[in-house]
Image 1 (cartoon, rainbow, N blue to C red):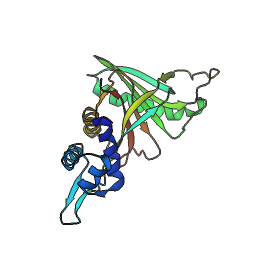
Image 2: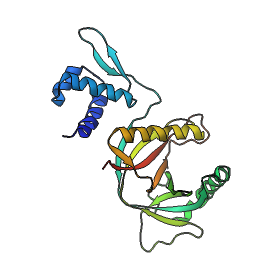
Image 3: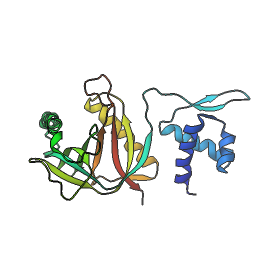
Image 4: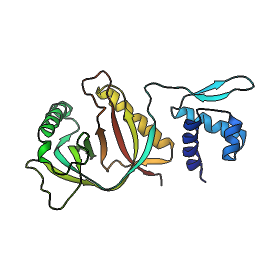
Length: 229
């Protein structure tokens, strides 16, 4: 087992156990006390808050963080989406912030025109980044059938099977807070033996828990990744 594999398994095990000693985990993973202690220090740098409990029966436990969400690795098979799209340069921030909400409202008003919706409640934004500009897609997932036609003014996009690092954004919709969540994912990716695929589609999934006008919202961010070569 490579160090990266052992480290990922350790992260899962720590989250399951919640409370443990260094020696207990060292025995379980067949490494020395010193090595396991070092692994636990590395876990702390990844945002897993560990609290040291002193005494003969002490050890470590995970601090419960109310607003924290774990980062998961999820594989999505080839998927088809239907909706609206636009291209914009990165400097057109103000125009994008006006156009995107309008297209979301337009999509919601025309959902009945889209055939074979897979998850009617869930809406998905996709982004394709290039050097000077990007494409933004405002969509819903569909069960693709060859006979289905795309409603006028909409587009169909098929995303190939991809592995993603996924984190739930549980903050406001302010751009700086969304960027913070993306940066948390990027740091996790680089520290865990992966690299992000900048040229592949990035996804944001808005489900039934998404409340755009609430003080704190909830949606999932998908960043495409692969094992670092």
